[in-house]
Image 1: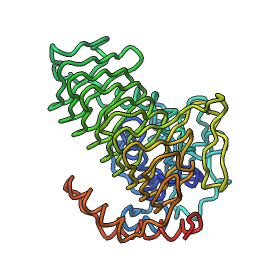
Image 2: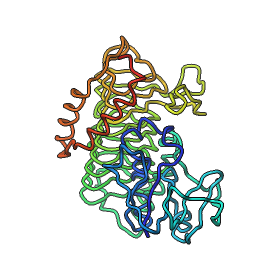
Image 3: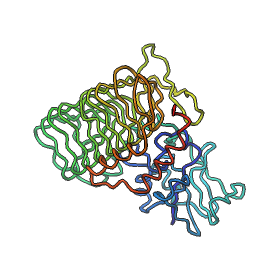
Image 4: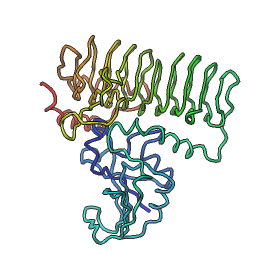
Length: 392
């Protein structure tokens, strides 16, 4: 069967992360939504997304296709229902169509002619807003841990590591750790292939560390926290998600936050995740172009791909930083920093694409990854689409 993951109506609510990727390639837990679906289905997938992303994320459409709403996290029950779909059947959850089997072009779907199968809303795990990524990360970690470790045996845990509930701790081949604490009481802990946890680190699950990622010496990490491949984590971190290739390698606090790809947080960067008056956090919404209610008391930083901040940067509660921005200096920058911004508390100027791309090429080359023409074309479009937010 040909499976296609489509963005769905919540793409704009997931900006700035969906500026540079389809919804399917958001990471929650250890795996991206696409990786989860592909592992469950035993099949590759393609993507229906924005036109400017298609060169990098093309769609493969055949005569028969199952379309899947990418904002739904696959669970074993949902996957079985998707696998069992027959032509002209659709799965609905509340007002959302989760998946449907079409023998026509996806643009001509008329659900009036479909047999509708219901999926209970209380069973669904959805990523409809940016804050869902960290708020629902604990459940996603549990699901990924079960998916990746079922029927397998962990590599031996070194004797110098103090473990609580070691049966819920899994080390992939090449994972290294010495002289630290792993506490899986509140959730599982997974160390990916060739990852490393340096001496003196204390980690409470749920926690997952992607392949080739690194936890620096003396780090204090509270779950649910996860990092994709090639990340560096240090200092104090609580309930946060790093997509891939991003670094917070030094002291400083990060909490209830989501960090995209190719980001770097300078030494002693600190984020506030709780307002002084304990009020509900409002977060910038690209969908409404205003500050949206989150329903959350704890919410820190949302940082888009290729953004950086200098040493001693302070972020206020509920700050959104767009793509390819560079923040530095004393004081709190405003809690919405548009893409391609350069500056800090004293004000911002435009971070010129030429300069941003030079930095991206150097940063990516350090990990043997090419900054491709497709990457540049995507960022060119983001620069144009976000002009209205910047003071040019």
